[in-house]
Image 1: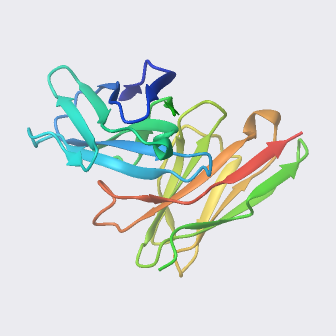
Image 2: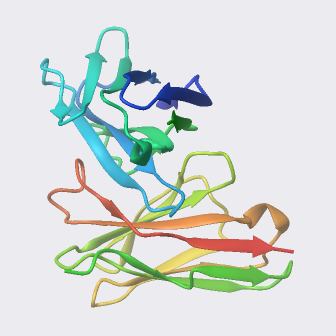
Length: 116
Length: 114
């Protein structure tokens, strides 16, 4: 069964600095999507960035970028120029494309604190 | 364009009772998934509905059931509530052809079972 692991329950970063959140996953499939979602105190999950497994190029969205290492099954999120509004829970998620499943599998999350 | 909406926002129930949670998908979306998020955990997939049928189910007991209506809105029903059902229940909608890489979440319903 596929699993997603986030080993950092909590991280802190100084405003304007850079922080990296870690995520590892386990799968025997070759085609899948990986996501980072942000969940602020308002509770609504917001998509931050996604990566298709067959694309070697790392995805970027403004201040957010990923380091996707397919062989190592690692998918970390880098937030540059951190802002107070980045403070939230961040969840790594996996979506298989080849086994006929429709569910997203989430990690346990990393709470990011941004210090002024 | 309204996003995914859920009702109610909060709910308090007693053990043994039954509860119904509601979800309206984002305009243009035809697929609805439900997730349970326990405190301090990531969301866990309950089931997904498409064309008014349950398309896939996660590892949840039969006490959890759902329904999708012709207008694509959906309900999640939980019978015989117990304390462990206390959680945030999230609804996510997508278009069938875009579900693999794009789903939108609602703000959730916080259920407390006492």
